[in-house]
Length: 435
Image (cartoon, rainbow, N blue to C red):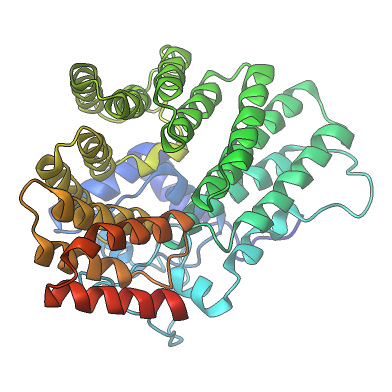
């Protein structure tokens, strides 16, 4: 297994565990709370804290440096980080004048390398011979691959990731089928492989490969049942619900979302239940059942308000208040409630702040569409919102985003005589033709 890029940050771990006496989840919440007090909208999670402590990041981005210094009263060096003074190219500003740097993986490194995923997945190169003895290091490598995939995907989309991620998944299956390990390690490896299968399935879905995603989610579901892992089972069912809705199968989406809720009911994570309730709402909305949609949405908000719990899985860190608002907006759009949908999508973009660039871009596209198709269309507002979407290209590469832009174009065509719309249509065609 390849070595980490940096040594583990034992000093930060000591500060967290021995002095602050916090779990990683509690530490992440303290970071977010401190950031909020400073006027910074951040989305730190246990996964990011693990990346800091395990040596995957030399030094956090500047926003987190300020927050950590305020929170602990220590400099970056005193917290065990390795600040760099080497000048680095600054990426283009995002639509709100801020860069779109990721959380647990430095975005500038990815842009400079061009193939950032190759850096992160070297941990899972295919073995040249039989895998041999499999231990905790191998399981940790799989977990770390999942961490890096999600971190890069949130800010850049799936286009550059899917093939390398699929190779990494192939390696884990070789370990499972050909390696030697104890029962305990085997169970952990199967669970980790299930999570990686979901991550690769997500990349396939984002790349427009629904059939591949469905197969990978099915593999994750099988792994969950073999490992008796209720959280993983719920995650797999939740992904199948999302895929079913996107594929135009609303009844299947409702059933899968309800199965997800049933699977995780005893896990002790209200926010997982909230997410799957919102997935159920999406299915009901596509069926046109307003009453059932409203009931699922209300239930999701009630569960989310119960707050984070130690049993929340790391992958759930994307499910922020911004995402909660965004998912409700999508349901409102399917019900034809375009004004509420536009308002909810705007709230999602604002709450995301500088994080989750791909999701921000998708919700920004939804804003444009809702303004264009509402009962009293606002084409200028639609064109303005659509212009912000183009700012994410080519940094974010996602087939879903490109499809959303195509949908924006279709919605704006009817208003093509308006100068602002005509200008956007020309810019869109130029950008996508040369991007």
